Length: 210
Image (cartoon, rainbow, N blue to C red; front, side):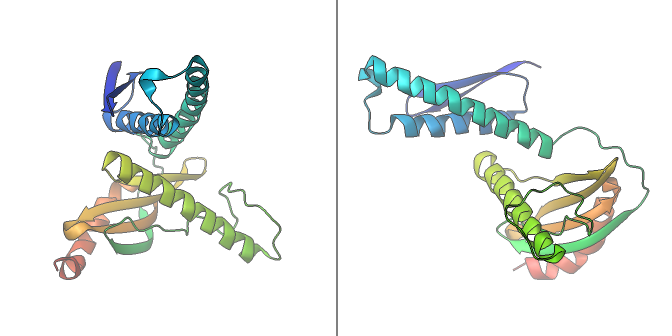
């Protein structure tokens, strides 16, 4: 449904109108407030000259376009749409446990480098290029996860990366007591990930209970 969401910071009210989940709306509003606060820092907003108002308005409108593009990228990454599964199995390639933060796995690229990750420069061999792609991909995932956690207080349950027609790899995250996160890299039918997590949990509890 269409909604209007508000956010107040430093006696300035920001609002957006449209169709969006509450947490994503909160993220958008906080990005608006953060940038506008930077624009008017050190200025008396009640006594701005016409030139100052024009300059601030132009810069703010331009940055809104950037925020919208970032929002749409988050929509693509954290999509709520149903993913069609052709497989009746799930394969786990990596399991990690991290404290106080989401662990990030860079092993999303297959040997053929199917993910379209552009990296600058020239490389002596395929292994070096793959390593650079993995590093860049890891940095992007870290930025998305940190931004989501910092601005919404929530963490992504999973991130889907499309490799080909109806072929995906998944990063899944599950939070446990004492701020521990279980991270899994998988391929196949994501509906089966909870079965895997259930089998892993008895092994985890000894380590995360302290």
